[in-house]
Image (cartoon, rainbow, N blue to C red; front, side, top):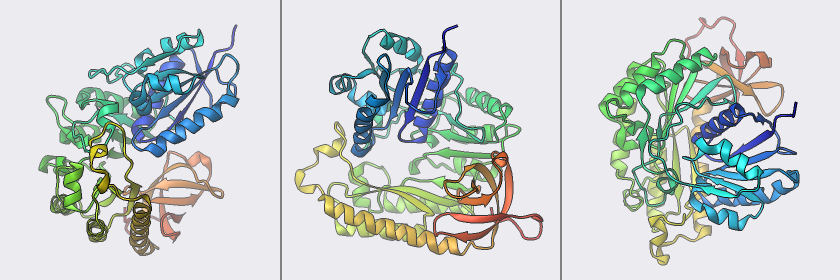
Length: 444
């Protein structure tokens, strides 16, 4: 019997890409391929890519060059995901050793496209399919701890800096019953945490049900202990959604709420469709309903036309809200987005944007450090997720998304543990298992 061909997939970007990689691996393994963990000698090498910033695309271009040395004479290499959708056939022209370019809606034909590439057929498959949700795919999940479940694809918001509507198409939502069915399978497979995914996930609507209905339905599936979702848009937190969060015990006390800027003037130019005051009102409504809620965010600095006063408003908004953490970025112009057509005179010099970025990072870290030192001695329930990168430790997360490192054997991965926080670097924590968890009340 001939050995089964092998496939290696390297993933860049957001959690949606992680989920798409799981779908691709599931499809290819069911078609006769074996997944491998390293590219060396793999029959098929795929890079599942992100296009949201130029830096992400440049990393992929560099990696494509590096991977030449891992290829056998008959290996094929392909690019999938958002960068593939954005560049299409241009990638085949730029990288002659690339045989496949497949956008996010093209994975149904992945086995046949790969087989064709192995016979020498080079192809770019970047057609949108606004009905595609891959309902009949069985993902090959990376771990047995938590499951990423896409509930919505595409985006209709069209922020002036964002390439997502171009690479992922218009917004469409899965049927609630299909999401519940997948959640039930996740529980049967031994997982107790689910993360619902969408580009603006809280605008989910399947024609009958909204995200409030979905949270209640998924959150009450027997066996689910933790429910998260990402990433929401501030405009789509209706009273129904907030009530569902507050009233569904499995919904975790953490929301990743992209702010992007604290300046109303900049938000308007970004076409974010809310003001600074509107964002603050959203935060207040969430915290009134869920008092222990922890917030993280995304922020862009150096957007065209951003002044020092605009940036100062971003810093003050961060201090006022008290984000636990923030993903911070310098503005990256993406071909085809409206922001690239703004006057050259309004472009913020790179050194100015870099200096603002460092001030923003320092501000967020200082806030987080002050809060985290105040948590020393508190007790929390954590879900053990994986081995930590340092020492003989395991990494776990609280319901409010704080990372705690604890001693323990790998056999504990996927289990819950009650711990007391014993130390902090200012960002992550160390903890010790609590034998008698009733001695002190749990903080989260």
